[in-house]
Length: 349
Image (tube, rainbow, N blue to C red):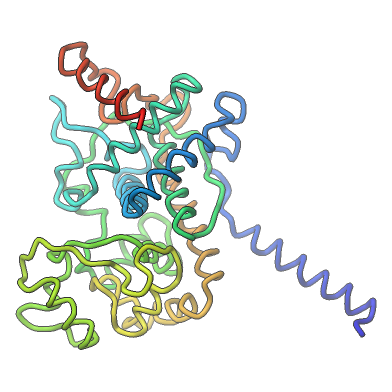
């Protein structure tokens, strides 16, 4: 029988643990808040969630595409929606930079479809960058991952990042842990954040060319032999155009099996597998492999921190009328009319 004193102590311990966990959640940066659209667009998140439920049910691969889009936006010049922009007279878009060439084209269309639905319901009050952040969160939730609140209030940026800035800020698949940690450290993200955010690779696919340097001409000795043989079947040459699942255990489920893969030397990229090889991050990988709840908690913290990098707020930036172009770039011509008709038609389905 548990005494009253023991019950009280248990309550204190549970309460203390709760507050420690709560205290870890990063506070919104200046200009963002947890309830930014509570008055101007209270149905915002339900509109996005309802639409993405259908999109991801029809094609679960879009979840990884939308999550990756948010990463590629935030790590380069901050979460300002600049990766969504098409090129213009002001220069080539970020989409033409080598690391962004494999971003799913459908992901861009989904974001602008969500923008249209939100603006039809609430008016032009919600930015494309905020919609991208919510869509990334919902992609995690709808594939089995943790739910969490997203600080909102971002404005859309007015400038493209250069190709060099894109190369300098995104982590390449062939990067080792030293590069991963140093790149993320410049953004205020620590080793736990780095390992947790890498867990996004628990869903989605990769093109062979992103990892065949580990197979040809010589096999990476850190790679499990059976895993390597299977990869060579899917990717018979170094420049194969095929794709493979990022997580061989549960490729369409957001869980901690990615870390189990790493412990079994079945990580796809060098940037993945080296997290287990390197002593600085090996313990974190092991802890996430053993405890999915811990991974989820740390992933949420990392996502909230990443999602607030160099945000544009207040009187800066704009709320785009279309996610693929700045408002000042909008031209009323036949091409625009055709695009708007196509956009309206696609939003019906």
